[in-house]
Length: 122
Image 1 (tube, rainbow, N blue to C red):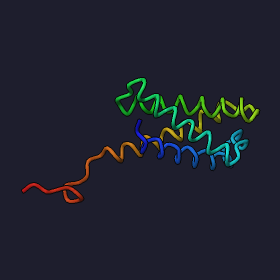
Image 2 (spheres, rainbow, N blue to C red):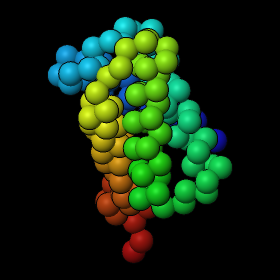
Image 3 (spheres, rainbow, N blue to C red):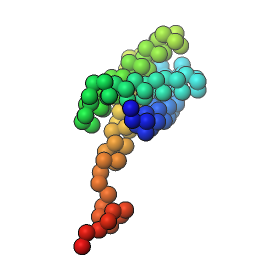
Image 4 (cartoon, rainbow, N blue to C red):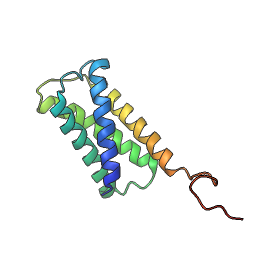
């Protein structure tokens, strides 16, 4: 399992859900401990799912992260917090988490310019 990916996804999900509680209707039911649990759980499930389902491309990883994040946020609020969030709110939060994770992955995979950090060939 990729621990670096799990940590980044946990941080991204926490920040999105924290600020989403103020901006997105239906996500205000999460307190700080709930935010920590749901963000770590969704990041873990998505990262473990990549290993199990052999998601090798960035597109497959993003689709899996979107589905897992939306289901985790919705079901966690429904079962453990005992509040029914609007499905659109869970989908919107999952979309923002997925887009931020995608942008981070694209930035990591981009090769460094020849003059920065790499040995130049002459």
